[in-house]
Each structure stands twice: as structure tokens, then as C-alpha cells.
Image (tube, rainbow, N blue to C red; front, side, top):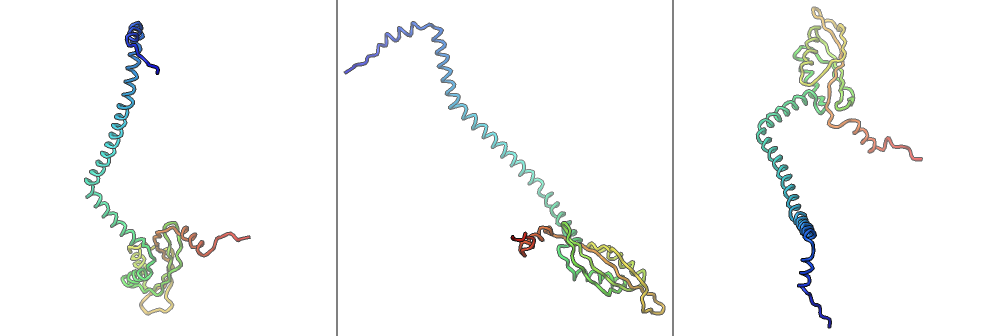
Length: 218
């Protein structure tokens, strides 16, 4: 059986014989390794954690500042929202989302009654789609004194819903009444309808459903 013995005295003698310069270099090198190990395994993780915490703190502080700003301006936002809702309702009256022919005819008839002009004919035409709205043309025939026709056009202009008179004609009434000059005429008017969906997209969907617009199979 082999016995191993360690002569510590001999080792001490060898260490003592090592020059002081080498000893100093070894101590510095070993100390550097220890410091590097401590720095890498202890200090670096702490620095990363601190950096993450600082970023999270800055993010939370920004969110808190935003929440405080929203809270401070809540009343202002409510007033602005109410104003926008009121403006939207006014715009929908001028540019409704439906043709609403009965109400349109009722308004025109009321203007005719107020201006003492007789409405004898009303005919809506086909809707013409544009980008975000549609144009609705309609013909109106009327009869009455000259000045009343002017009052009627002015009353149409003052309606909440936008109605434009694009063309009109007047001529003497064939059936003359003694002491009274009546005129008869016809005008083309135009109003508008708001479209929630673009007509081109809707037309493409309809074509796909109907099987139109597809290339013929060979």
C-alpha cells in the first residue's frame, strides 16, 4: 500500500525562495480574479435589477401622470363630448343616414303651404352613390304667384336638411283666373344621404354574392 506524505516544511522553503516581485504579481492576479468573480456574480445582477426597476418606475410614473391628467380634464372631456354629440345630431339632420322620403315630402309640402304655393307633383329619382354620401334627385311641380315661388325656394334653402335647387322653369298657367296671374313650373332639387359604408366596397360584396364579375371558366 502506497503512502503519500506532504512535506509542508519543504513547501514553505520553496515559497520563501520565490522572489517578492512574483509574489506581488500573483497576489494582484489572484485578487483581480476574486474581484472579477464577485463583480460578475454579485454586482452585475444587482445593476440589471436596479435598471429594470428604474424602467418600470418610470413607466408607472408616466401612466400615473396620464391618469391624473385625464382625471383633471374629465369635465373638459365631457363638455367636448357633449358638444361633439350635438354637432353630430345637427349634421345628421342636414345629412341623414336614410333617404326618409316621407319626411322629405312632408317638409316640402309644409314650405309650400307656408308660402301659399301649391305642390302638384313630387317624384324622387334613383340614388347616385358617391364616396361617402349619396345624391338623391327629385322633381317638384308647383303652381302659384311669381313672388310665392321665390318665397318657396327661400324656404327650401332654410330647411335643416340640405336641399339644393339645381334647375327650375316657370310659365303662365293655361287656365287663367280673372284678376289673378298664376304661374306653373317645375324644378329639379337635390338632397344628400350619408353612407356608413363606401358604396364601391358594398358593390363588390354584392357582385361576389351574385357570382358576377368572375372570370369565365375555360
